[in-house]
Amino acid sequence: MERCPNCRARREEGATCRRCGMELGKLIEVEEAAERLTLQGIAHLAAGDPATATTDLSVALGMRREPFAEILLGFAREIQRQG
Image (cartoon, rainbow, N blue to C red; front, side, top):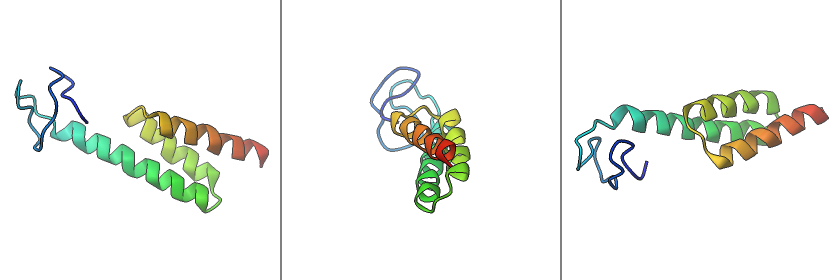
């Protein structure tokens, strides 16, 4: 997270916005969880398991929309279709 979703101030270290005081800890945790799931999806694709990769990437995208994860999900689904 580069900016506070409330006031758009640039985010610095810490879990509280320096400008508006909004607590960002839970949002940061969700963002990190989405990143971990995306990495797991990549690992499952590399291991030849597109079904599990699709699940991981779908959950990650439900937490946070990321263009890279969307592309990976499309790739995983295409591999599944090709069987």
